[in-house]
Length: 113
Image (cartoon, rainbow, N blue to C red; front, side, top):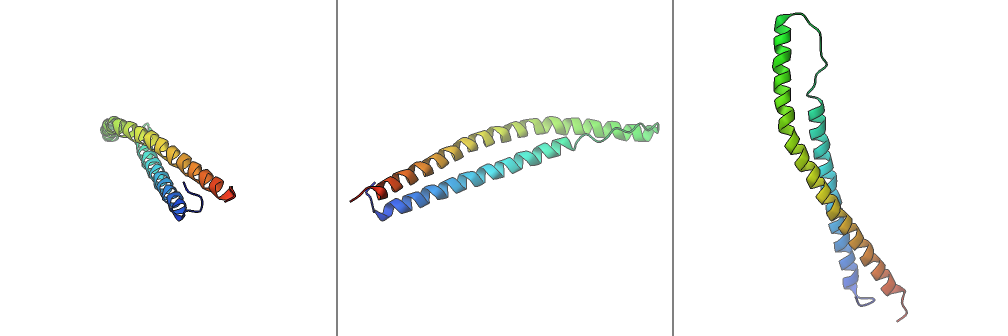
């Protein structure tokens, strides 16, 4: 890096843009995971002790459906968690890159010509 070079500022701006993109990807992935977890958590309705056979049959059908849906959401949630973990690593690298470039740029400006 050459002190006073206008490309330094553009490089820092590009790094900041990449950092912001990575952070927004983490935010979107976290929101998707939370939505899936909320969907999974809503599958279990409160149990009612109703002696009506039709009600018990409907409750059983719902429990069977919810169990299948719960099992189907498992791999989706696992993939979302893995994706979030990967995106967090990428975001951390982008943040570090931004900080390093900022320090280098400031160091270059602080040195006398």
